[in-house]
Length: 246
Image (tube, rainbow, N blue to C red; front, side, top):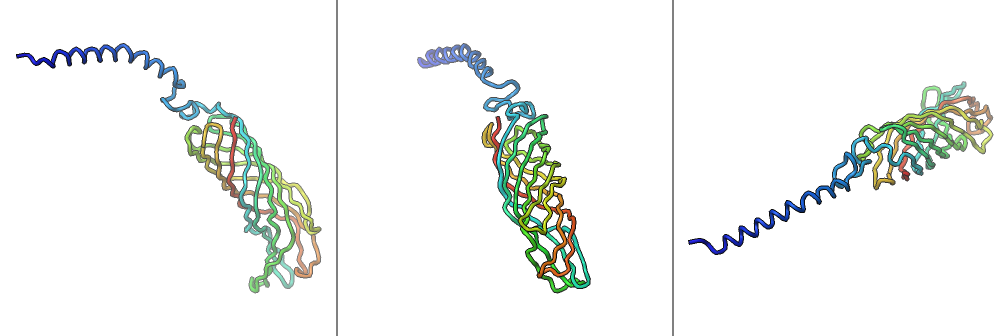
């Protein structure tokens, strides 16, 4: 005896199959039209490999952080004292503009400024009896042309990169002991870029900077017999910033 429910179910199943076969091709075509070429659904061209490197090729941004000294600028000695000069620590701030010129390379112009000051550490000739003296105020302004190399595809949300740049570093002071001068400098290090949206990215950078400045011979009560001259200064720069891309 035939089941009275079988025939209606078969007819309903056949109708659903027919409807799906009619609607599926147009829906697939619409989905393919909505995708970027070479991109998966829900992803932009910029987010796939290096294929979208030409999107948002220019950017402008600002940053803030810290400039740390700690590397000896030089060592001077006289009959009584040994004097070591070091830069201090201070807030770092600045801005940058950039241009993406290749799939994983970008060139940026960075301007930064800090006032770390100059500290003299006095010891006897045996390196004992250490005394630190604030020698002079010192302001450092740098302008660097920096090349960043993205270590993975730029379209990823988190992109580590390496940095190397050259430029000029200006040292100045209200103190007459410091020679105001512009000298060549280099900057090197790396960072991490965090893409928030297509046109907005957060950055964290850690860099070293090498530059120089000059100081005059000066009779100072706290630093008897100190002779100073030209010194190379090393700094550690770390900062957090924001880039707007267009």
